[in-house]
Length: 126
Image 1 (cartoon, rainbow, N blue to C red):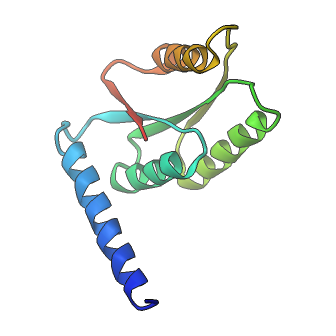
Image 2 (cartoon, rainbow, N blue to C red; image 1 turned 45 degrees about the vertical axis):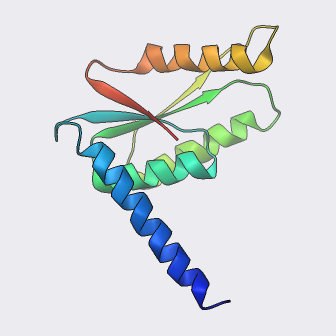
């Protein structure tokens, strides 16, 4: 069983890379991207991948909903990773209104994206 794991990982990585490259090919080569980055594995993988294939054409944004004690730490983590990649990073704290917390957090997050996205820039989310 141990011998099959690297093969599976290689196939998965190849498929992931191929799928992402197909998506990126739909945009003109000068397109820039704003990566919505939560600090979780999916968005960090996306950040690292797009930083590798589109260097100099990406920025990242971490939206701090301020709903968890560690949310500021996640923002620091995202900033540190972006610094390693030479990717400009925005950390945007938002206020989440009472009510349906998930919906309110999503609306606050999308307002932050809208506030920071530049003309012609494409928002990319994991």
